Amino acid sequence: MLPAAVLCDPLQARQRVNLIVTRLSKQVERAHLEEAGRGSQGGGRAAASPARWWLTARRLC
Image 1 (cartoon, rainbow, N blue to C red):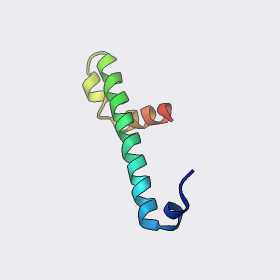
Image 2: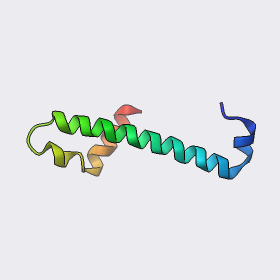
Image 3: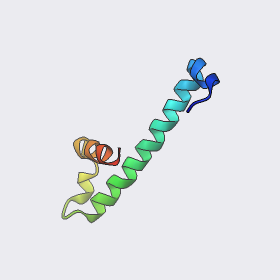
Image 4: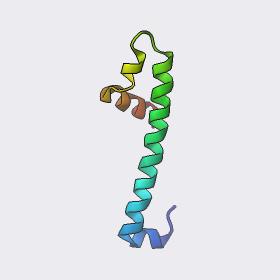
């Protein structure tokens, strides 16, 4: 649970959300690169696909 001060201060709340989104994004990117490394030919290009990135994000969440 977030401290009351964070809930009351919009700037701190936004910074907290940005931090969470950044961390999740890094986790998704890392998992995505691992999947691309295990893929068949052209796996490196699969990591750049937005649809593929979204599927990886949904799987992690």
